[in-house]
Length: 69
Image (cartoon, rainbow, N blue to C red):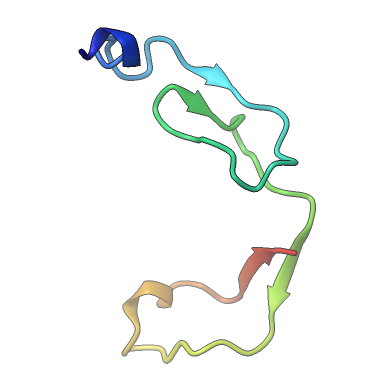
């Protein structure tokens, strides 16, 4: 049943670029991609976040964290 889900296609061979990011439940995967260099226009900087350098390696190289408003 892979045919009906486009699972029989090679990854990235039939990618649709999604330009409308107004829906927060947007589907992004190997068939629906954001434009190259995409950055939302409503980013806000998180002032206080629980990231300790050397302990939480997920933010080791991040000087500031941002999320969509």
